[in-house]
Amino acid sequence: MTEARATTPSLPPRRWDIFCQVIDNFGDVGVCWRLAADLAARGHQVRLFMDDPGALTWMAPQGAEGVSVLPWPVEAPQEAPGDVVIEAFGCEIPEAFVAAVARKHRHAAPGVLWINLEYLSAEGYVERCHALPSLLMSGPAAGMTRWFFYPGFTERTGGLLREPDLQARQERFDRAVWRARHGLSESDTAVSLFCYEPPHLAEVLKASLVAPETQWLVTPGRAESATRAAIASGSPVFSPEEIQRIRYLPLSPQSEFDELLWACDLNFVRGEDSLVRALWAGQPFVWQIYPQHDNAHHDKLYAFLDWLQAPESLRQMHALWNGIATEGIAAAGIHTLSNKPVWNKDIVAEWRACARCARDRLLRQNDLLTQLLGFVAEKS
Image 1 (cartoon, rainbow, N blue to C red):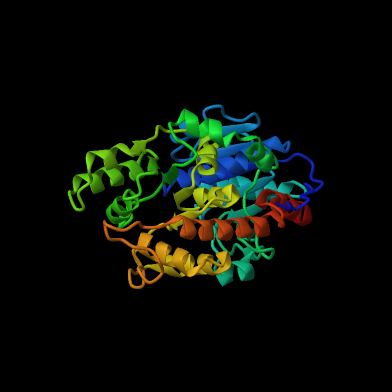
Image 2: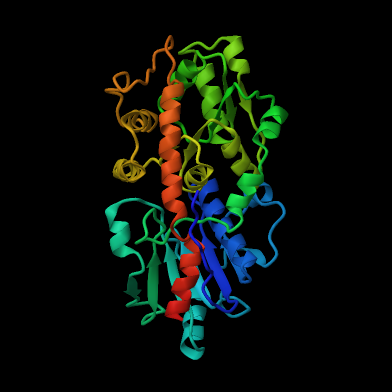
């Protein structure tokens, strides 16, 4: 792998306020915590305001020096707002806090930099909108500028979160030891599952378990509930031997989730944070995008698959997994019938080659925080 020589921009330590309202359980928390922890690791002080920080008790039980997790504010802060304010995923900062930001901005130099960190997408608007200003026309912060910062997969976007030591951690990781500790042999096909409620989950589980070496590792929460429901539905019927090859994992910190992705032969991930981690893992993966009532996520998925340069079999698997289409599945070499494997070694090898090419392209770009620090240095 050729990694970009990311040089952290020359930016004196700043105080950052990050705001996060949790919508999608773990993903919003995961992204904001990784950003906060990475900022602190690079010498900055961070206050992370969250309306539901409960997941951090297991996601980041060790905390991080330099990061304070605070409840969602309803009043102006006793201490002055930070030098940089980030509202993640379009959340709305309470008006009293906004008023305090505006007061500091008027009286301090260089003022407060206000950034809206947007959702991750490969759609074309991301390149067009990344780093654009938005002048606030009303409210207590009227006259201030808010900047849009879009994560993305190309050099004309804000990039993806990637800690500076991530690659070194992965290179030190002993995959064989991890698999042995989890009762897996090297000949097993280990599949991790982190999902919402995929419409064809039961079919995929059943068809994959036709191969006796397949072992599923299911994460807690919605993935576990969906899996248990699929088995309990009775259609298809799972044999006791097949059910034994579906294991349920406990809650784990982010670092251990990374290891799960590194150790498995195929990863099913969901949302934003785990997608990025699956990309860095360089293993074959299938992404379940966050469902939306107007199916706007379909375009988002297609744009990502285009960027990924996904082979047809992987595109078809994503269409099946996301409930978009089922036509052409068999023609692409993927079967959903219970008497045929849902994938084979050749298909997985093709998906792995695709994933690693994508990772190599991403590694030639600077990570999101390096770009964000450069942006703050430029605008301050």
